[in-house]
Image (tube, rainbow, N blue to C red; front, side, top):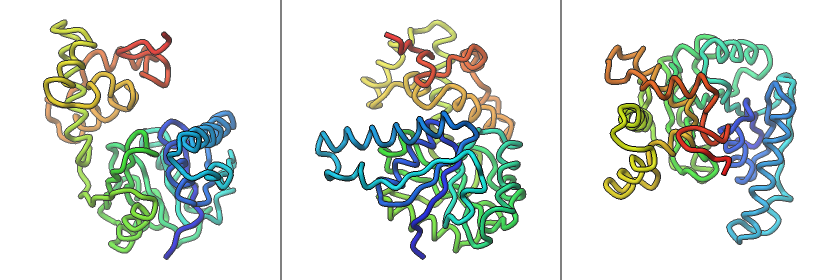
Length: 282
């Protein structure tokens, strides 16, 4: 089945990148958010970004003009989409509330994918009318650039659903891998503890944030240091993944470093707030 009309729920950083990835591949996209300002910013950001890519010769001329993106703050407006990608706030009660509402809005045959970084997809699926149609489709930031997509089946997910999402991922130029459900999946299970350990080293005063990042770039070949990566991902997201890993496994090695908690409380979430481990106001 060819998927042409897609609803993206959530117009934040990840939602914007995902809208970009789908729209640039020729899909018709409806982006939903509870805030009109977020919807407008998302659409403008995608069009501006693809326009710049045209100027640089990275995409064919006319790509920006051909984009099929609309926005809404009314969830009922996605009633006729063929696929839904949900990337709302990483809080289980919020996600389950959204899936409950979707149950009375979209058609029974429509697959609903979640972009959760670490939450239980099995639990999310219990809130939807067709749990066999719920699946993880985990993009990475920036979603329009990063090739990997983790496709994760919940306990209830049918293989037909998994296969469809794998094919859709390939259709938009991504490289999907199939992953069994587990806290953090593959990438975040490895990556976030690395970010967390770097935050512990920073907290202990062993090195500055800049020197920690330099060490990992020059000593381990990382293209970006772990603390800059935390700022890119969002310190709130990194903290949420740490908390989930800790709660799901009970293993103390996943306990969040104090700076992650302190910065999240201060509203210093990284690049999206212009301040995190580094200052982006300069």
